[in-house]
Length: 70
Image (tube, rainbow, N blue to C red):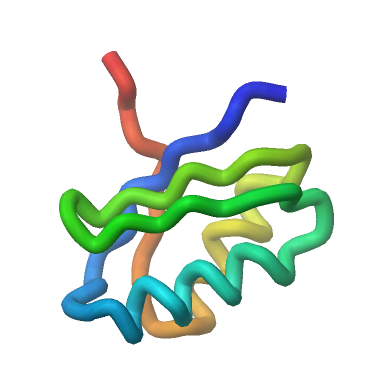
């Protein structure tokens, strides 16, 4: 499966990056996650349900949406 790129809003520091990374890694079906503070993106590898990814990010206090790559 192709990776899913999420736009993450609300991250302001490396602590935020770690919190989002850990939250996404706990979602069933996630194999690997790469989160960057600037530009606020998470690349999720695996076969996870996007709604579960969004919910995991929201539980940490941030917002997520699929990033438009066009």
